[in-house]
Image (cartoon, rainbow, N blue to C red):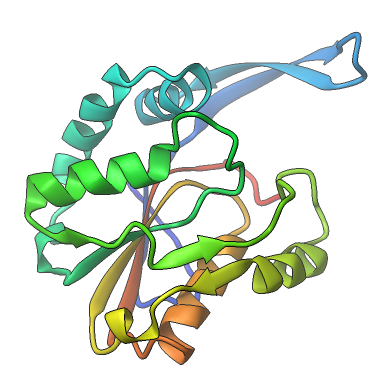
Length: 191
């Protein structure tokens, strides 16, 4: 099942929900809320790749994306840059590279950069989140996007802030002809 994503991009799509159910378990010894999550098939694969470093999940993720038609019509696939640069496996550039190879579409993994240091996952105020993203996300090569039909790739759609900032950069500074969005999953609620 796919889910439409609405934003400043031409068209957006999430392949599936990230979780299908979640049960609150209480607070752990570090003061963090804990949940027992049931993930969708794509959600579990993304989780395994991103948090468990399970590279075998990559081929399965891209195989599921075979049902998404039209990827091959784009000039460029552009992954959203990672916010946690210390993570050994960066899932979004890997997924974009594999999808690009499978569909014969050029991937520009470094077109967008992230100069920010902090993870934004814990920032719930949408205005503050977007301000930090405006300062952090950069377009590394303005000429590479000019006149191109771009498919932005991300692993998880939460509030859409990151994708909105990236889309704005690609249109306003990069001169992209069009920007579309594909995420592997989306949350059930906007946070």
